[in-house]
Length: 137
Image 1 (tube, rainbow, N blue to C red):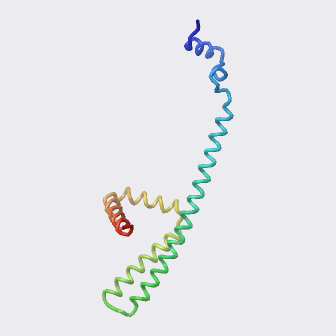
Image 2 (cartoon, rainbow, N blue to C red; image 1 turned 120 degrees about the vertical axis):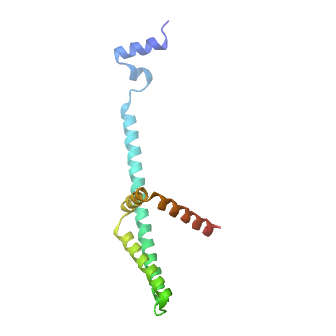
Image 3 (cartoon, helix red, strand yellow; image 1 turned 90 degrees about the vertical axis):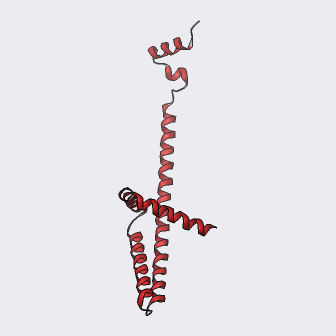
C-alpha cells in the first residue's frame, strides 16, 4: 500500500506535484499578490496625500499664529517682545519648511535627526507625550 512519502516521490519524478497537491494554478497566486501590491500602493499614496494636506493646513495655522504673536508683542519692548518675536520667527521657519517639503522628505529628515541625536529625540518624545497627556485629560 503506497504511503504519502511514496506519492510525493512519484510526483517529483513525474512532475505532477502541482496537480496532485492542488497548486497547479500559479496564475491565481500571482494575480492575488499583484492585487495586494496595487492596493497597498494605493493606500500608501492616499496616506501620503492626506499627510501632505495636513502639513499644508498645519503650516497655514502656524503662520497665522506667528502673525498673531507678532501683533500682540509689537511695541511692548524688552524681553516679551524679543521672546515673542523669536517664537514667531521659529514658527514661520517651520511653516515655510512644511510648505517646501512633502511628507516623505519630512520623515527622512526626522529619521536622520533621530539617528544623529538619539538622546534629544527621546527627551523630545517624552516631553511631547507629557504635553499630549495633559491636553487629553
